[in-house]
Length: 453
Image 1 (tube, rainbow, N blue to C red):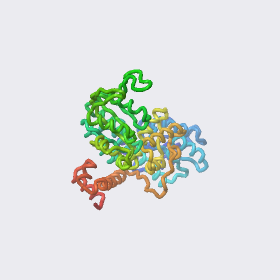
Image 2: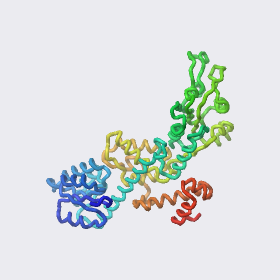
Image 3: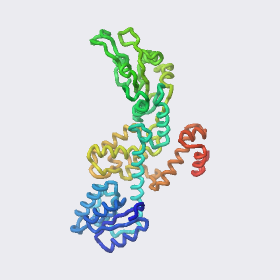
Image 4: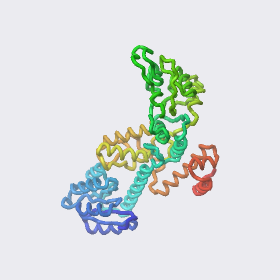
């Protein structure tokens, strides 16, 4: 077999059918095997992307025991391989059982070479697409932002902003829906800064009762209130020299907003019950899912504080706004959860990938992570289905998921160009900068995809 060509392993004990299948696939390097031992040897030697497997193998040519055992051994050694089971007309139960064990598809005898050729080609395209998605997942953190998967133009633009802002000490406001990764990006700002060796202190302003929040932030002196038996530093002091992350700052009580504003202006604090001003050198990052401008209009958030915490504002797109990224993140999560729960070889089937692409993800990445984790825990076979993810199958009238990689890239490029132009109000220079390309490249892509600006 040549290294770069598509590879197909045909496991079939009938010499006539074996020969016919060998010559039916001109676009593939085809190797054959007549039993389990030979099949495993050829699998190890050639690492084919697709396997066609007759369930009736010797010594159980009249049954399916040997074929099912071969299937399980193939997927244990090469879990990403797409196995197409070939069965007799009256063997549907065993075919369904094979699908449960991780087979990708089944085809009944007598084999229609044209239909089988179509199925094999689709299997190869899916294998190729999944391989590229995993490569994107592995390469998504080349920006140095640990834990952040960014393959869409929208998130790559956010990551570029984070990288530019991180070395500075400007107070940064991260805006985005719950579950979009605000804390991960805040941590990236700290990790890429000169303060990385100092303390990272995170506090959720919405999770602490208002009566305790002030002392949590600013600390307190002995005797400041009942139970204050000793002098205690607050989180701001603990972050001295490092970074303070105020999550859900939009929920900060009005009574504390003035005190936080004074700290941000003067960089000094006064503990509860104290009088001495304590200087603190800290970089402040804030985040919220709230619409702060609306809360200002409603009298729930100070306008002067808003401008103080938003020297730089980074808007994080929702998962539904990130072109193609849900599938990439889902595959990454599936790999990590499968390893954690000792369930190697789990894959999403085609319907699951379509359902992931079609779902709106109101809970964003956190919702996706929870659904994948549950699906892995509950999985009985080797394939994750829409039902396993508790998702509705994609609508039949939706655009089908393409398998041709050139088509995938062209579709993604075209959508990214249009979204970028809409985002910047038609300014070509800004759109090109947002996409990380030059103006001539932008014009070339517009011409390539026949987009009317």
